Length: 113
Length: 115
Image (cartoon, rainbow over all chains, first blue to last red; front, side, top):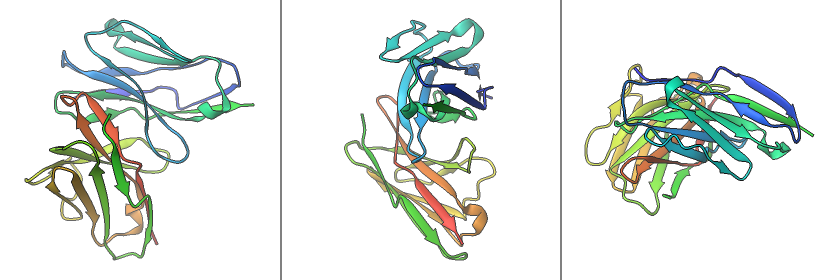
């Protein structure tokens, strides 16, 4: 069975601090996709990033960056220079060949001014 | 990416009534859509896979007679919560898989409150 673990339940930071969200996944499939979504208080899911299992290249996109380590089954996400608008629940998710998404429990990020 | 419209965004209903939630794929023909449920301060859990022209596939523990899914066209799937009770109060969100099913696009979600 596949599983996504977000060990951090809540993170609180002061504006401009960096925030790193941890995600560890389990799967026996060799082909899979990993996602990070943001869910603001309004409830909608906002797509942030996607990575496939064959691409371990880590990238930076604006204030977002991610670290995909297949050897440790981790897909961590970092917000640099956090802003109050970054306050939300962040979900890591795993997509397999059956096209179903398995979500982690979510990490609530609070950025204080 | 695909545009997914979900309606209504919020609904309050009386216990015992039924509520229908619509999920429309506006610019993509979706043979498969997914319905998720999210209880307050919890994660999203897959309820069922909606298949165009055939029966939905329900996840373990989800009552198919209570959560009726109809996917009559390539652009519309509906979820009907029948005889709703307060414990059905939740956030329901649909998604469409596209691009060889490596992308997932979500509707805006429906917050259901049963009083």
